[in-house]
Amino acid sequence: AQSVTQLGSHVSVSEGALVLLRCNYSSSVPPYLFWYVQYPNQGLQLLLKYTTGATLVKGINGFEAEFKKSETSFHLTNPSAHMSDAAEYFCAVSLYNNNDMRFGAGTRLTVKP
Amino acid sequence: DAGITQSPRHKVTETGTPVTLRCHQTENHRYMYWYRQDPGHGLRLIHYSYGVKDTDKGEVSDGYSVSRSKTEDFLLTLESATSSQTSVYFCAISEPPGVYGYTFGSGTRLTVV
Image (cartoon, rainbow over all chains, first blue to last red; front, side):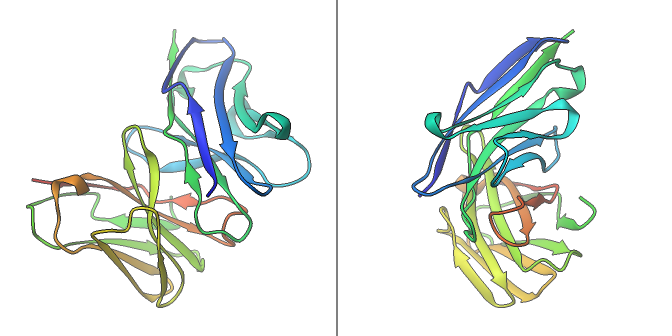
């Protein structure tokens, strides 16, 4: 089955600094890849997704991620962190017409003033 | 999310008692999912449904059952609650599976004492 590994359970950056959250996946067939964000006491919200086509995908709030097949990675970046970006971020992998989306363990992002 | 609601939001129950969590959607999506969220594990799939009365097991289905008698409602039942089932439970909807990502409810925090 497909799987996801998020490197680093906690990332701390200063406001205005680059955010880099790492995600590596394992899949025997071309995957669909997702990043979700979870704010305290809320459900997960879709941040961005890669299905097919352009490997650099842009999401909400300035986030983007690049699908690198050779590295089996889908890292999430934001060039300038805002205090409002503090949340937990989950990477997920799925397959076409498959009901078993697998999630990473999550990375908690802290933004320092 | 406005199109998907979970009830109750919080519940405390005693070991050995049955518990039912409800997920209600207004999006007319065919696919519905129950996940549990635990620290260090991300989200893990319990059961899913691909239509009225059509359900299947996920990764961590032991001790849980589901029912879907209407498109809009998906119920999760803990037949005899145990402390290991203390968790946050999320319902999600999708159409079609795996491609566009999921829309999540706000979650139910269940404590088994």
